[in-house]
Image (cartoon, rainbow, N blue to C red; front, side):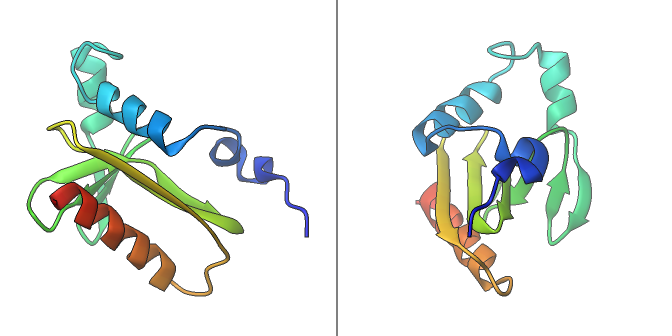
Length: 120
């Protein structure tokens, strides 16, 4: 089966590596590095969507088991699932897998991997 990832709009339009995403999100969260502090404050402002997760301007905020949060993207389209982001302290991880999830277990597993890496 062929799939055009642009069907997911912007989610399928970016081509990058996990290392590039780690660097980008680490830099993004430093005030005045990529965004003026006032705009970064808007990015950090989230609306709760459940389970301690907040949705904001282009990023999600997810709680860590060791305290604090990480901010970043995450999502899936048929065949791919990604999770990851960076902490305010500069730790970053992104995980991408090829999968067609049939339930939420794959997503929970990826979130557990991200949590373990960032809480190490």
